[in-house]
Length: 223
Image 1 (cartoon, one colour):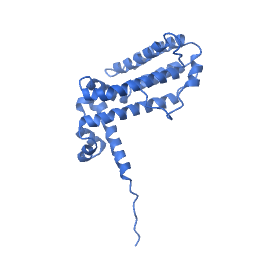
Image 2 (image 1 turned 135 degrees about the vertical axis):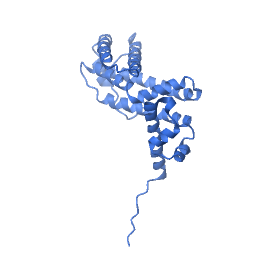
Image 3 (image 1 turned 180 degrees about the horizontal axis):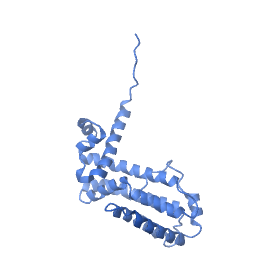
């Protein structure tokens, strides 16, 4: 009689996979149901995980959401890395960089982050966890934008111009949460691309090709 032994998945790997499902389900619930509509019960149902297993990993909603904050930062960084790798060279690069940023700030992961921002305003524990992550993401997104645009921040006003760019696309993302703003957003980005090309100078595209991030290796999560 032959005995077939199935391949057992190591406990550590099963645990990691279950936590990943719970964190992904948390982000999905934040997007679809908002902060107030996200509950541990809803997350466990969406993840296909028993209530007991969910409580074992994350005993409370705060535990679950605080873990999801770090997960969300990683997802946002990976989205930006993949988009940056596909950017074109040439005269349309600046507009493409702006579109990449605008797509990120109108994406579901930004919607989930926005729900956390609003909740953190009146939740000290969430604010304490979220603030340093957002500061790090902000610094890294600024650095990436400088590199992708080929901007020289040694020139007066360039740093402020890059930060204005990020404030602009973030604001357009906020506007998009209320109504579909795609047509107006495209016109604004067209005009802002012309401003950037004029202010950053003709050497910017060459610097962008030279300094653009090579990919995920060695990179941290970026906003």
